[in-house]
Picture: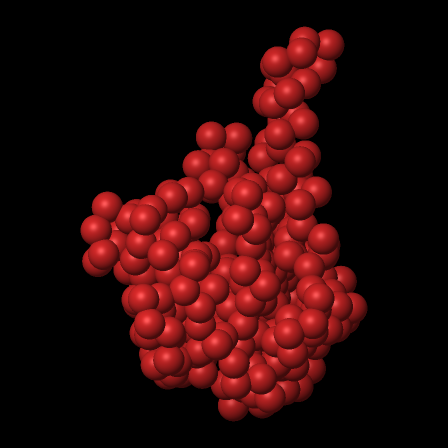
Length: 276
């Protein structure tokens, strides 16, 4: 459109120079890109890297979560109403892998679906990106990984305007998926006094960000049967024979690691391959 659209104009007005408006054309090169919120640059993720994402059938013990996330993603890809999603739970339980696996699975029949991983540390940079994306023909999932390490994480301040959309609203072709080890994103300080108005405000800010995600999915460590199913899935992907001895060694490995998760299952198979 001659002269650009409203959203393109707003993105340009928010930038110090025309070069700072994200080049959304790079999205045409593949399904995934990485965004640097400080510089505004988009870097395409090679198809070879996307091909190495853990397939959805290798994620065990979280089938209900995958089904809900896939349904939400399929609705969004089709242009229907969908929620922002927060995947939370213990480390290594498959939150990030679930996002990528679902996007890859749904994307096979939804050619307009794209994912951009952003550090989201710069609120202005993220806003420019969202504005620029409004005028593409893509349905874009903004992926923010590992949120809420501490209350000072700058992304906890940068995300609310993106989730709410501000005065201009959010383009209908942009949605946010985030992962966190914490359900409420930031740890509650030990010295927080909820009888103090300022401390109450701090706590409310933390809870308010979590509440902005309409879809909240919990991920937990695996029981023994699900862990062994994950071991079997990763073994088959790697061409490793599945037998009772594999299970025995996997359980010994997980005991030494102190965890039974999808990540532990994958690491066990990698360790086996390194012995060959």
